[in-house]
Image (tube, rainbow, N blue to C red; front, top):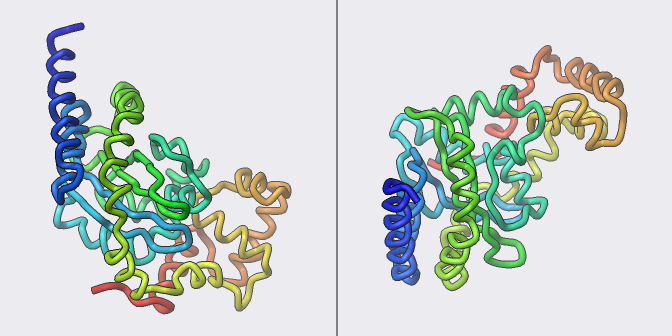
Length: 273
């Protein structure tokens, strides 16, 4: 083993041991992120409690520049999460493990208006996640973001993160299995209790049920081909429904659809101050 690699391994071992020692304390999350940073430098981190059918709750964050905090924290946790591929995957039962955004995003996600607004618009190009189960309907997500001032994660870094995944999750379980936070999550629930229902009802006044399904998939970054696979219909039929819903909503583009959807959520829900 090369000297530099051995030094990194020594630093990782010491840091993960330190995190384990702090597993019952308030500084555990910071110590765990310090351990990750010894092997893969990360620009920003968010650790959240994810529960099926509910808004995620932020537990810890580091490195988010002040100019992006409103987009990342307020808008994402109040309503933006509804279109996030990771949150959708968690809601559908994503298993414990390590994932990159490309592993779970729809095929056209990186061209979507959501990606432009909530990733590029928040100064990030890419993220990846450690996921652990902390209950029948609850998960902890450790989200790592790059792209604000450095390059995106390269394959060697992703491979390193996958390699440490089993140990990191075991150490994380030592903390969150004993300290599943509930009080913090209840606060955000009270702010927007009907948000998932609001998402499902978008366009219901003019769109058919099938057009609504196509609309939801398009908003989340699915192409016509991907939407067709999900709905088990032909891409041509998806395109027909897309044309019809555009006409009914009086819009002419994906950007206008996204803008109208955000306006709908703004009018339907209350954004936290």
